[in-house]
Length: 264
Image 1: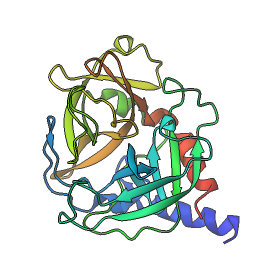
Image 2: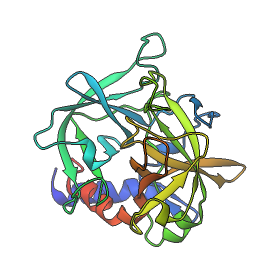
Image 3: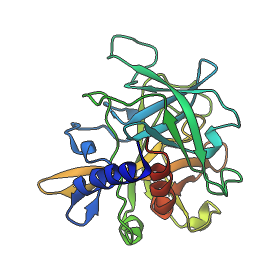
Image 4: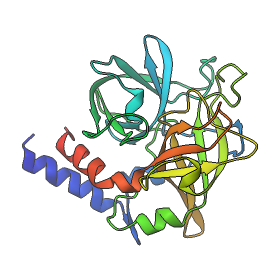
């Protein structure tokens, strides 16, 4: 496929996502996804969740964002990494909860200025083949409009979804978890303006949550749309402090260009 056709295809996909004040990276994220449980309990299906596997074991979380691409934290990747992404996962201890599909990661695109989890901690994984969406596998919604930082900054209540520990003394859960978080001042996390600092006095993110999506429900007509605004990066203290998330809105030009350069 020529670069011109790739560009045209990508722009058509983006234009289809135009919805009022927002443009969606992949409009197929708008399919109904049912109610979801929030607050450190077992989550219901989150069909965009990606289960990253290294050496046969769970490594990190991530989010499906388009037909061959998964978004995660850069520190979840390594040079010459051999990663697989499992989609459709919910409870890794069972096979009766729905079909899962594993994809090999063929390319890893980390931010060129990435240093560590406190600096440009974002990466895009390209999978070995196109994904066919179904009830259990579908991308998360992401706004790609320029100038939407004001919208992201106005949101104070978020949801984190992942397979990370809910307590440093507990073993890793096999079932997908959710917890609610509230935005607090960045000073509590010691992060720059390109990060979101959150806190929940009763629940904390921990090992295994890295790369997982931070999202929020926004009104859409008579219902709502669930949108990703952050990527789990690190937590202060011994899994009992403030949670830091890369502010995805701040990196939208980078994400857009990365996908455009490697769409096919």
